[in-house]
Amino acid sequence: MKTKTLKKNKVNVVTLGCSKNIFDSEVMMAQLKGNKFEVEHESQQDDAEIVIINTCGFIDNAKEESIDTIVRYAEAKKEGLVSKVYVTGCLSERYKEDLEKEIPEVDAFFGTRELPKLLKTLKADYKHELVGERLLTTPTHYAYFKIAEGCDRPCSFCAIPLMRGKHVSTPIEDLVASAKKLAAGGVKEIMLIAQDLTYYGLDIYKKRALADLIDQLADVEGIDWIRLHYAFPNGFPMDVLDVMNKRDNVAKYLDIPLQHGSTKMLKAMRRGITREKTESLIADIRAKVPGIAIRTTLISGYPGETEEDFQEMYEWVERTGFDRLGIFTYSHEENTHAYNFEDNVPENVKRERADQIMDLQSGISHELNQKKIGQTFKVLFDKIEGDYYIGRTEFDSPDVDNEVLVKKEQGYIRLGDFTSIKITSADHYDLYGEIVD
Image 1 (cartoon, rainbow, N blue to C red):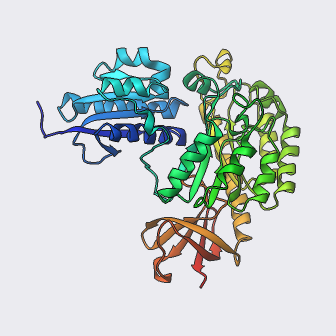
Image 2: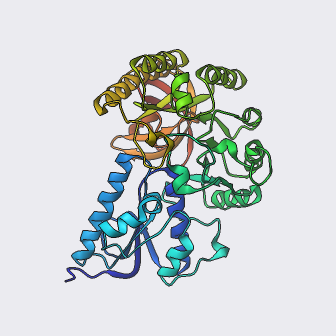
Image 3: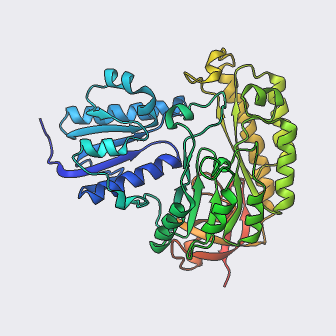
């Protein structure tokens, strides 16, 4: 029995997982709005007739969060708080049959490339004239910008190709048109995302075309920062760095997930690169773009990882001094190559090793931040928290990297604006500053 009145044709879209899912939800929301639905993202009102959950199926923790969210809305449907529940995204792509059996309250499950089918279920049309349109869920001054779908890499631990399929690049002209629309709407920063940025163009242009794409995006008036996420190290196109040096609006920032610092582990992971080649690549990147901030992601506890392998990674992180770093504990994923091996590193050891790396990185970050005291940076301000304006330098991406905090009593700062800030103090992950007149 219904306990409250639901708004007919109102859809609440709930997004879980990575920035690629955020992008997909924004595209879906634009299509829904174009079909006269009232659309909200992660509404707190719980008055929508329809809920669409865009799930993540990457690792155990993400899968659990997705399942918990589906169950929450399945229960809400039973209580009459929701009329229809639909599930899409990576978890749905990967485990559709199991989910249909386990959670029958869900009205339908859809894969990662089934937006037209989802819309049809809602008696809506997939409007081709809306291709490239999005309803942003981020602050209006920045946007995630997906340049390709899927992945052709054979990494042993990764289930993404199972959920997202083969690599498909979006043509340059389409991406430039999308960037112009975003800029016209006030977006100043775009973060290029794909499962593998550096593979961009190989399928449609028969060459690595990331540098060409960035160069053309840099011409879009109003885009002040272009940021690069998720570059693959093997076969890294060095001409990208030439564009970074040439174009002022390409941030000196590179997110390049390296996964491990042991050649033995990299070989087991099927990464196609050694630690020695990785070190040489990082040195070349830093030599070519002085001052570049490099972010990486690692995995602890891959099957067969010994204490010696871990120590090799630890010493490599210490030597390399990454500007930004995150680490996952290994998740044993069905139908991946690594699933053939015994998941033989205990969970507590995986966690301890990850904690050791993050403790090391905390010290590295603190040391690097101390060197910024007294310097002045161009800062883009994203939000207000308590007594502080919170912003970022070109060396930091939202949600995952360092932040710049300026006390509100310093003066007025409009969110979404760039302001010159002199750094007055710093701790492990935050910089504190004052407005430069």
